[in-house]
Image 1 (cartoon, one colour):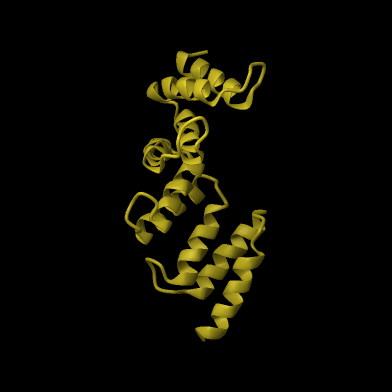
Image 2 (cartoon, rainbow, N blue to C red):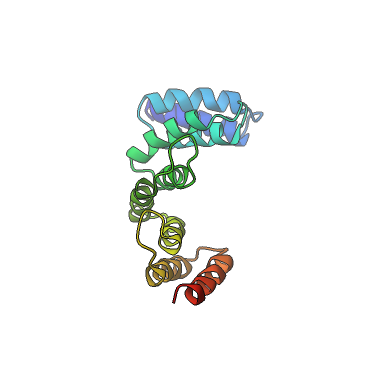
Length: 165
């Protein structure tokens, strides 16, 4: 086991309280050591810690910093999260093209939830021309891949199809 893996494993133990008393501050310490040695999973966990305020004050800028490191390393969940930050303008200027880029990378790396982000951008015409057929295609792909909670998105799509005939 490499030092990077050892630090990540210790970070997980403290994060989830596996065999030790749970401590987000200890988890953060070990995740930082692991991430600095190149562990993208540890960088993603640090993003979660700062975004959720787990043992630290919520710090979206710090979260985004770590998510970008993980996303650039190929972590699909972090890619989706970076896209979401750009979609809603969280600590960055809203940039729908950038959101689309990260959502597509996330999908290509196996995160089906990012299909919903792509569908939303097409549905609302954010960064792309409004295309309800394309939105429906992406929602159906997400549904076919087992993504839950799509009922509202399909309802909104139905209404949009009546409005934007």
